Amino acid sequence: MPDPVITVLLVDDHGLVRRGFRRMLEDEPGIQVVGEASDGNDAVEAAARLHPAVVVMDFALPSMNGAVATRCILKARPETAVLILSMHSEPSYVRTCLDAGARGYLLKNAMDLELVDAVKRVAAGGRVLDQRLGSLAEREEDAASLTTRELEVLQLIVLGRSNKEIAAVLSLSANTVAVHRANIMQALDIHNTAELVVYAIRKGLVSIA
View 1 (cartoon, rainbow, N blue to C red):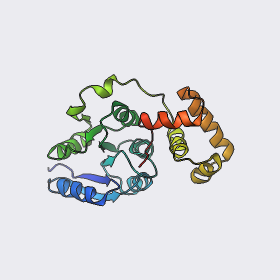
View 2: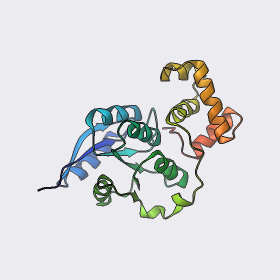
View 3: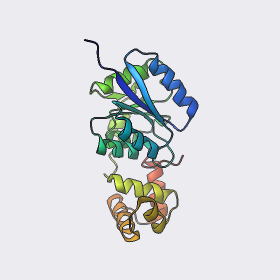
């Protein structure tokens, strides 16, 4: 009996990159690309609609970064395997994605056969970490754990949105957003917005794409 086909959702804000990944994956028997998305929100919606076995996702995405999108996807469909592809080799970025539930992290210049092999491995339940990262991700001290909603609020804070604007985007009350903001600052032991923005960007908790 043949092995089941591995269905894949590709998420990257550059169409040419998605096209290259699609060609690479579909040249491999047993892998089928079932959809594409260009930002974090679209990725979450497409994953819920298409039920891919694997989501191959860039980290730096418009609307929400790959780590936040990973949390949202896995909250709805925990059986989905997420593989992050990124230009960022900083340990904090890697750790943030793994903490969000991603099963793998590859650097984007790892084109060759590595992507195909990584998709197969995460689909089978394994984990993949780009060998060029060494053990850097494991040595990085974990950032304070924030909920998916807090990461969504943090993303919008970094984009300069007010509590009222964040409330409108997330369909929350302004008071609820203020509570989330306070909880984030308390969890990270940060006491002003400017410091919070710098920390979030440096630690790879948000996307500034």
